[in-house]
Image 1 (cartoon, helix red, strand yellow):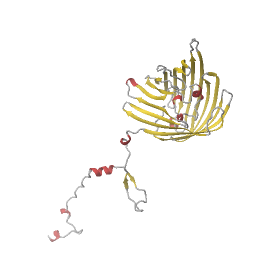
Image 2 (cartoon, helix red, strand yellow):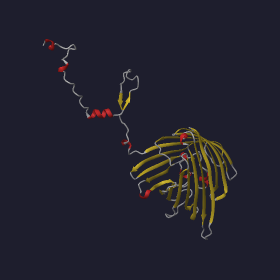
Image 3 (tube, one colour):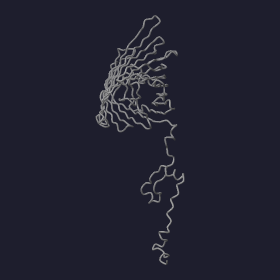
Image 4 (cartoon, helix red, strand yellow):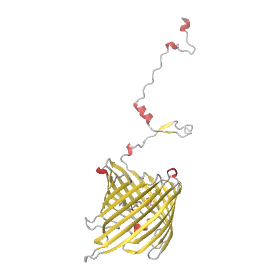
Length: 390
């Protein structure tokens, strides 16, 4: 009995009389939330200097829910410099040519909105602003607002999307300005399903207020149609073909008529295993502009101007691209005046958010002037800029 009553060597009750440990109490909901809260690790050495230790909570965490009502916002800078001689185009030696601001967001389950504001040296304007309706019956896709017309390939591109620093002469001479066809209107497109290739048809109607078309009454709208076909030739090569037509009034008066016809082709080669190092893109585009005027005596006066360009770019290293382009363009109201140009380009692409370009450009103008210029460009972007159309 004395032996049993004696204390154990550790000074505590025998193991037979030890009660099992009670399970820990469940953490209160507040503690669970604190455990799930994002944390950041304290920098090394902070504790030794009298600072906090371990992981610290992060307050003001931005989640998808907290920005659901905010659009994706981005800004793109386009800085261009020039040296050499050009007696026709008075381009400054150094210029912040454009800053583009984009605001893009889903409006509701039925559509999304895209706004692009362009700020240049002299003015700020709405470059594009439209609503895309994505849930229409019959597989239709519609856009309503101010936008670039789906005529050809180059007309649909913003300046920072161009593969060269300058615009092809075709836009200035045949379409009337470097802005091309950009107007307020409605666009409806539909995929034409077939077992052979991708085929898309687009129909558009515009107000008729740009350098090519004019509107004198409400019925003087501009009509446009485009048919685009795409096919993969191999796993690394594809071909993209398109044809476009547009017609409406022009600046000569309400008895005038302008008809545009365009054809474009794009060939892409991008080997899958070497895609980040090798790529080839070749593109050409042809446009005819027939401008006519019918006076009161009924004798139609008409001219037809033609413009084209052919060029390509080759990615020969991960961040380096070389390109070349040839231009030919007649003047709309005097096709006997012809401008020709040739360009060579080298692009360094540090990342998806910046580009540095250098371009040699030689232009032979119809008036007899010949220009020799070297252009350089810095492109840089910040924010969530949406993907470009393929």
